[in-house]
Image 1 (spheres, rainbow, N blue to C red):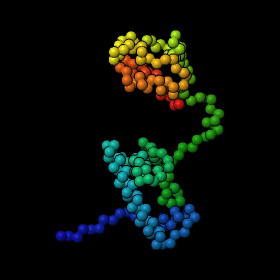
Image 2 (image 1 turned 90 degrees about the vertical axis):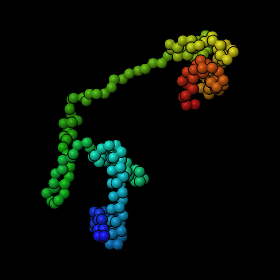
Image 3 (image 1 turned 90 degrees about the horizontal axis):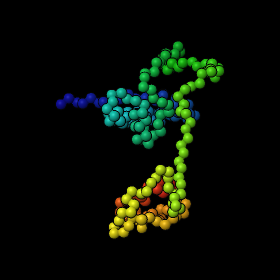
Length: 204
């Protein structure tokens, strides 16, 4: 049986790791730079493999920046700064050496500031009014609400009106305390009426 060849991966040179450390004000020896380069290569392969799994789960064949950021967040690593683009960015070579950078369009800030055209697409301001009124019994009811459904019917051997609480104060906590036994013990019409008060879901 032929010996299996050792699989080799692309490695980051220790000079690059040393330059990154010097940019932050640290000086590394050759041994430390070699160990860090090996660890960085392993972390990059792990993040790339996890990002490809996210790409396969979304049934895509193109790896995006969001996939890589999800893989980094999965490993409790800070996401890459910047944003992704759906289109390929045009790259221009630099004259000094083998360096490429994305081509940016120059914007004249003076013309942009003095432009008279106002950008459109802003939504118009709208005001929504909600009116409530007090009925004859002192209960607060929203506008347009009529008599509760099933009023006057018998609910477990007693009239439906007997399940309504007495006039309560404006505090949502007191209203909740008075309606709580009605929600659990009465029939469906009374429970529906008790749960129709949306102010009970507001923070106390």
